[in-house]
Amino acid sequence: MVVKWKPSAALSGQVDRILRLHSLRTIDESKPILEEVDRRAGREGNAQTQTHMVRLRSVWDGLLEKHYRELVVAIVQLLERMGVWGGQTVEWVLFKAEKQLDGMASGVASAHADRAARWKVEDLGAEQSARLLSRLKARVREEAESASAEADLVRQRQTPGPEASTAPLALDNFHPRVVEVAGALYRDGHYREAILNAYIALIEAVKTRAGRADLDGTELMMKVFSPKKRELSVSDEDSDQQGFMFLFAGAVLGIRNPKAHRMVQQHDPQRALEWLAFASVLFRVLDEARAPELGA
Image 1 (cartoon, rainbow, N blue to C red):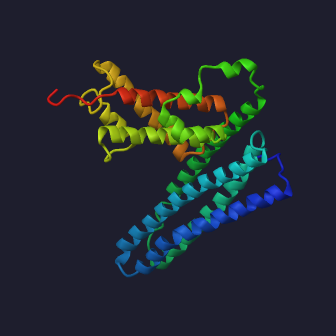
Image 2: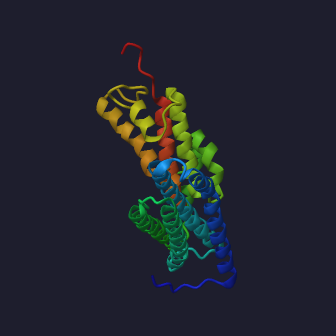
Image 3: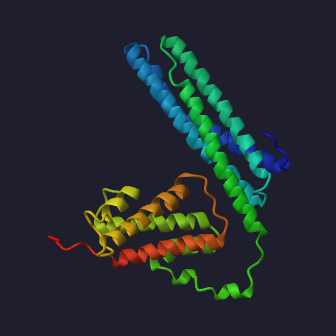
């Protein structure tokens, strides 16, 4: 990896503090399961010890992925606040984050090998963990490069002309629930959070309307709006009903989930407004939905 961009000493120091914080947090969160393995190993026979070792590696894999993503997001947010995110900075961010990830993964591998030798069991899962980390780096790199490109595009855009103020797409005209949960965030420039709030509110509204607190996310939408067994009906035509089922499910899969689970930054106010407009449309469809008549 060739890194051309160099930060100021002050910025580099802030990033180093973020790196140390996330490293310590990962270690702290892994201690309980590590202590449990050490406590039980050797007392329950090789088979149980092997099971605990596999569980420990699985926990480590999950923690490394969680904290790697959080680490990259924290550094990106710092650079955004400093006004330098985008362009060549993405390589520097990934270089710093991947270096820390590799160091922690090496420590995990060493700890597993030591324990496997001590308790005379196989150190299973090392190759699988290496593949998981490799795929994780590739996914986060793709997300970071996409976020960086979007930030560059927003900066390159010219100031909208005076006709923009007369555009019919106005936040205040959206569904009241969208305005309530996302309006202030959008106006303050927190576009990702505004979109996420709107779609979380949509999911909760569908749960309430259908009386299905037991379901969530895509499963909720596919069952509630299914044309085969309708719990909320938006059209008498099965094909239309199915179309809306996919629209609601797609809102979860394609909009809510990426914003909630991945490093998807949103810098473009127009695009953010359009995502909120789509949420508004779905809220209005939900308002007009009806429960099927009993015995129908």
